[in-house]
Image (cartoon, rainbow, N blue to C red; front, side, top):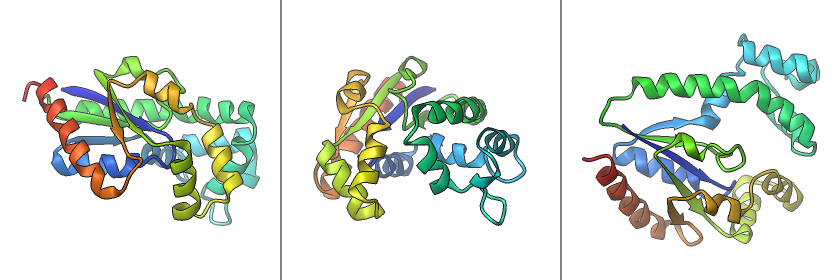
Length: 199
């Protein structure tokens, strides 16, 4: 099994890279998706988040008000750290279960947004970074996700900067250009991952 950490700043295009890698045969373990699962209604994770932040972070139907919680934690590093101490161990445990279920010949892609921030690079056989300039990231967040420029800047500021991410990279995918330029690069990285996995 080859364990690959995949990361990139918000708006860099990591989701598209993940989608392509899965289409080639990778097993994807998506930390963001797991982070949503571990705070669904009825989970110990949601109970712990409500205990830390109060019932005002729930919607009328009892689900987590993600935008509301985001507004709280992305403007306060201490509150973000509190949230991370609740969610990260739960995500780690579920990720380990999913990895154990993958076959021994698998290329397992761990899609981890905060890989650089949390010093997780040593957990993987290699790290792939999806790279884009801050200007491109900001433009995509405003244009494609409907954020205000201020919201985009706050989300980007809460993450590692470009240099910190590139410092942990074994392989870099440049996604500063159009979508059509991305696929050939991802295909080349996949070929490299298969070679490293001995396939």
